[in-house]
Structure formats: C-alpha cells, structure tokens
Image (cartoon, rainbow, N blue to C red; front, side, top):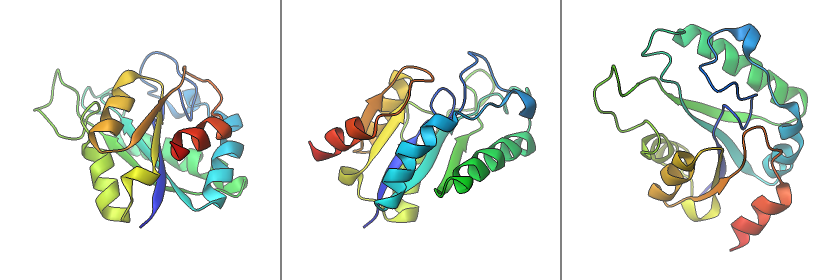
Length: 164
C-alpha cells in the first residue's frame, strides 16, 4: 500500500486571500512549502491536493482557470524535484449545488484518492488551515494537522504525527 500527504490548497500551498482566487495572476505559490514536502516525497509519500473550489459553482472562475493554477503549482514542485500526484477539487457550493459527498468537511475526495492510489490511511496525514480539513481527514481514517494560513509546514511535526 502507498502512503500520502493530503494537502489543502488555499492557505497551505498558495497564499490565502480570504476570498476566491479567481484570476491566475492572483495565484501565489508558497514556495517555502516545497522543501519539507519534497523530503516526504523522497521518502515515498504521494502528494495529493484536496481542495474545495466552490467558486466554480458560483461562476467566479472556470474549471480551465483552476487547471491553469494547478499546472503552475505542479511546475513549481517539479522544478524542486517533487511531484504532485493528483489535485482533487470539489466544484460545488452549498448555496447553488445539490448536496455532494466531496465538499470538505465530508471525506469524499480523500476516500476517492485512497481507493484510486491504494493508500493506507494509517500511514497518511492531511495538512489544512481550517478545521473542516481535519474533519475530512478524520472521516477517512487519516490523521489531520491544522496549521495557520500561510504557516510554513514543519517536516518534523509531520513525522511526529505519523509516528503516533
């Protein structure tokens, strides 16, 4: 079985602006997050993004714009020798969409990744900047790590959580 580091996007991998990031030019990758994640990637962890993107349902931006942002993010990781395995996103928003199983705090995206990539939840963690990220992780049997928006990820803290 594989092991994974599940990552929220806004506030963890890119700068949090406390609103939807609707334009590619407003998408700022937090490059200081890459070195600790590269260490984990080098240890065999899959890096998987799990992100709510309700702005799509609200028609604030498109799937194409989101794909462009994720392409930029992936290239920044590749430049430093790491790879994002997959970026899952929930395009739904509770004010305009039917009930879905993917929007965090539900665990649908994490469960899909676990099934797709044969991931052992007990060997994996989810890093997020909101309680709903930890709730989604726990619902899938994955340990959650809550950080502040734009806070640098600590390799040592992740390893400590994984060893418990």
